[in-house]
Amino acid sequence: MPGAEALERHVGTPEIRAKAVSLGIRPGKMEKAELIWAIQRAEGYTPCFGRSKGQCPHTNCCFRQDCLEREGAEEVSVLEGALGLSSKVPWPVTIKAKWLVPGTLIVPRRLADYMAGTNTVHILYDGIDEVLPYEESDRVIEGVNDFYCAKAIAEGDKVHVQLQGLEPTRLSLYASWKRPLDDLLQLPLQDWDWQRNSLRDCIIITLARLEGPVDYRVIHSKIAVNRDVCVSSVVETLSRYCPRVFAQVGLDKWDLAGWASQVAKS
Image (cartoon, rainbow, N blue to C red; front, side):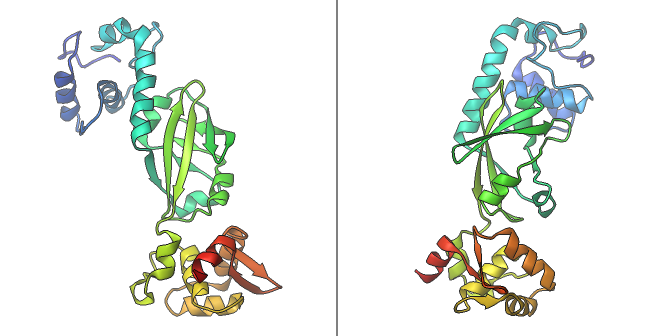
């Protein structure tokens, strides 16, 4: 990384934080390596600190001496730092509707910093180890459809991403709904925001208050009183979350499935 010549060859954390602030970066609780990566990105360079494997060509980089002197131990410390950080609190990602059909997941930037040079990741959940493509430039994991399906994910839910290891990169995924099912079923209808909550949750609330299997057209008519929605969207949502959340009964009727139905009746 050329430039930043105002800093000394051996750069301490206070100087790094000051440099970061001058570039409009909010250091917060970033560790030294994270700060340097943020500075390198802000100046248009690859975040390569601690990753050059002794082959750094940037002889005028202000971080070069510190980077190379610690090169042997740096890879271990970066790995341990990543695992230590992620093991405390997994990184939460709020799911957007446009991610669901293609099955994409955006990795948080600070977590992605530890994944430089990665083009595949191991996704771990429920005893499954699935290898998926990773696009580093956009921080996108592709092909997460099976996980979304297994956890019945809808827009507004959170996926918590926890780094388990590097070389190969292994990420554990955990899901949490925007509102737990118990809350959905106990919430008074007058307090429900039909517009801002997912159609999945609107259907759950509707079915929980109707007795027995219900024709999808009735479900639509109940929701349409409070929200602008077409019949096809209701059918698509029922089908997407079947059989995890909804169960088709006969040709046109639907009900809550399995665990959802048990919670509704408890």
